[in-house]
Figure (cartoon, rainbow, N blue to C red):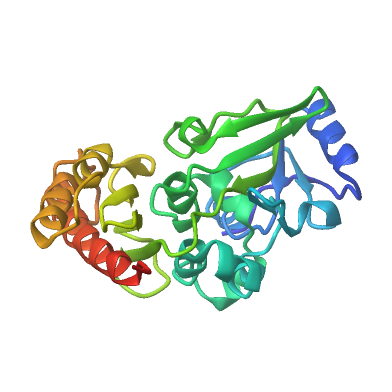
Length: 287
C-alpha cells in the first residue's frame, strides 16, 4: 500500500521544529522513519503533517556529561552501536542495540524514535527502564524532565502533549566492575522480541549484592521492572538458589496473549531468559 497524503515540513533548527508542532494541529514527528513509514504505508497512521527532524544537528549526539551519558533523540542506532563511549560506559545498551532490527534499519532508526514509539518488545525502551533513564521533553513553553518509569502513559503511548518533543535521554552509568546482560527470544534475529530480559548487578567487597536491576520487555504493554526479583537478590550472595528464585519471580509477572503466543509461554520465557541473563551478568562482575 501507499502512504496517505500529508504535508511535509523540514525544519533546520530545534526552535523551528517546536514552533511547527505548536502551530500546526495534527503534526507528527518524523525521525528515522523506521516505524512511522511502515505505519503510513499500512494505513495505521494518518498524520496531516510530518515534521522531519533529520536535519537538526543538535539532536544527534552522544555526549559524556560526567554523571550521565546524554544521547540526542535523533541519534542513529548505528552510531550507538559503534560508539566507544557507549561500549565503555553503557555496555548493556551496547549489547541490546545489536538486537534492534538489522544493520539497514539501525542505519536510519533513531534512539528517540524507538523511545517514543514505545513498542513493548523494543530493546531501547527496555534498557532505558532498566537503567532508570531520564528523558528531556521540550516545547515552545520550555523543557521538562520525565523519568522513564513515568514516560509510558499506556500501550505505545508516551506521556507527552501533542506539541511536545523528546529531545534527549540521560542515562547514568553503573560503577566500574558491575555485571550486565541482555537476553532476547525472537523467531528470527532482528524480528520483534517475544520476550527480552535486561539485567544489571553489582557486588560489594564481601561478595554481597548491593545493587541490581531486572527488567522484562515484550511480556506486557510496556517494559516491566521486576522489583520482587530485585528485592530477593539484594543482600544475597547470588548463589544458584538465589538466582533461581529471582528468575521464578519473572514467571509470576502478568503477561499478555496475542496472535503469536499465549501469556503462559511469555511467562515461561521470562523465567528462562532472566535466569540466563542473571548468570551471564554475575559472571561479568569484577570481584
